[in-house]
Length: 222
Length: 235
View (cartoon, rainbow over the protein chains, first blue to last red):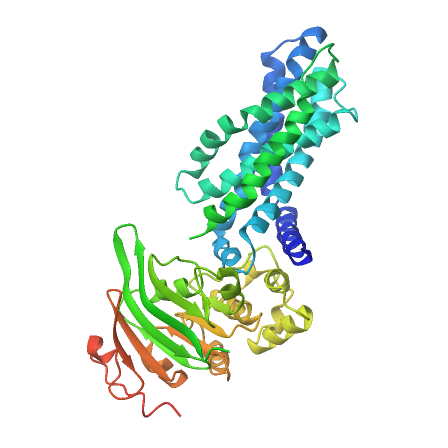
């Protein structure tokens, strides 16, 4: 167990260090998120009441779009650099490689989301900077990242990986997105009756994570 | 304890409908150094990559230290070191960070000392704080060799390891290859240069093992007509 944790931490440490030095992912994802939010801001000239209705959807579409841009890079960059083989040569369970990459993706997305929430609050004049949204944001991002990391492994083997990843990822992540949008709406404007969206998010996250850990073995194995 | 470092029985490897290895049978003893020869496309790299668990055979069996490459992949990986065509290093990390990363994945004990030791062996201690991206190709090859021996593998697989190495780099490679107790399989096209390093040569042609020589006329001569003998060079 401690050996696995040490290997996962090593993978995460390496990805964070590389990102700190290159800032490739962070810059790309942040700029894309910024552009998306600005475009939405001009596309929907919303009054406050309508903004509350549309805001969760706008927010999560922006998060997902920015995420799609970055999530594939953590694995495809290894292939482009020729270092994926170095990981595959090491005596490390493929599930641990998955968890290391998942942790890195979660951290990258969390940093970009923090910027997005601040920008979103400013552009749409909505109270999204509140603690109640934190678990929703975490669960939604986790659900997206679990599927995204798995499919990034699948698409990394393809020459058309940039095209393949969104095509595979977006339909599968729809349940997570719906639950995240509804859970966010519940926080922004509490409703009399609502499904337990956060619980559904937890369920999706667990299912996707378990599938990811076991399926990654077959995706990366020769 | 098994007395063979590598045992291969009827090994077939395919890429789609094309067979890269066609029924290879081969044994390599502990501490034995074997040169794998053959023309381009003979299957030399495929053979090494199969032993490193990077390619899954579709038929037959291969084992390293008695462990099957298909059933005990992680244990096999722990006792194999591979230097391939790519250095497998991160350009934006320093030499020390690269080795530290791989050392932690391999759970190497006493990692700091071991990194210093392997860097000394490849003559690159003075570059340990340099970014790998700033090093020359030959220097990166030396770091790649250091990476491959970091975890003290009992089987070292070297795929054309001397390409890009200068005289000093080659001396380093020679010292590492001839270190006692470790089995080595190396592929090369530079037969003359590498004869002194090995005990034995095998020749592959179109995925088949056509020659297995420990003495006498050198296998490669059958293909290229270069007169070499192993007898004169192996002590």
